[in-house]
Length: 455
Image (cartoon, rainbow, N blue to C red):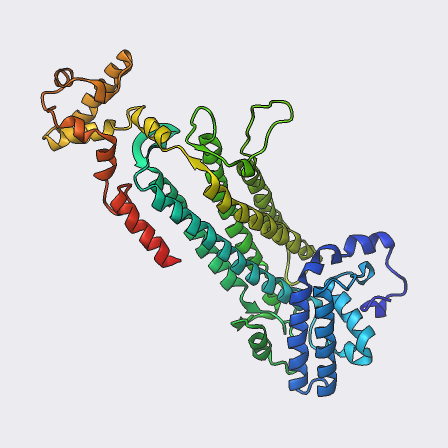
């Protein structure tokens, strides 16, 4: 008979048992579930709600189950529905009647909420550590490429020269924000719902703060209805994961483009590439492509849970069993992506000369040419028009701005002088942009120092 089967006259249908069971995925929560039960049982004994001897027997039994689970000695039972019933059934089989006292003063509703809170908190900390490693990799790479000039783009058209370091530091800012989002997700999960009961708390004199203290949780929930029906903290986690995957996907898209024969800015290492079953010349950036593709999967995890939660009345509903698989899937996907990304970046070859040639073409220094005229006293709008005409002239003759002799430049405006060539050089274009946040090596060094301080 089910542990909850006292009021039922017949067994549930086998199809219902299979449909209702969550042990196939929530067995992942065994550690959190057992730790929560140890804290709960200890508190019950301390409060005199159950005999001290029973509490001690329960704790010893749970510790044995935890040890066996960690070593893979336990086969979870599908007919026990979920991890909570599995643990309680095992406990009672091992220690007898005392095991039946474990569930005093709690419900599976607040029990599963506690397990998920603990899991989300620990997973957020795990992701922050992985992001720290990725950020350290990016900062090291940026330090190597402070003077590597490359084209910057808007609308996927060459716009202005920057450095590869500056480009990498844009992603550093994104991933620093991701760390902050996961810090928020960790803080949101750092709350203890046990004591909410099924929805209306309990008549037993529980010491909820003591349970939170034993579990290393900073605070308790303040409303029993919300305590069992809140999944905002899971949604916070999934949102942080979705944004992080979006950043990884944007970076992956650029790596994929830069790996093409048309760009040739980088070459991915053989260890992080694959070949074609039919075309022997192919070297495909499959790791970056998979990261880009799996981003949609994590978006689906977030959207799926938002959809589950949107119409649920208070308090707990069985629909909320659907919260764990999205969380587990997003965590697994993000861990894999963040684990493979740093070594992929560390092993790729950066073609500095190709990047520089790319910056030299496409009139990336046109804005600096206009700024040169402004410094000579020409109103910016007039300077903009003059340089636009120069670009059109160069396109007709298949030339770059730096190819034009001074006499030809002066045909478009008399303010041009010999120093215009130095002003339009790629290095000058980059070096003059030395305000905070700019691409000049001096500014990027400061940005790297600031990011390292945050880490």
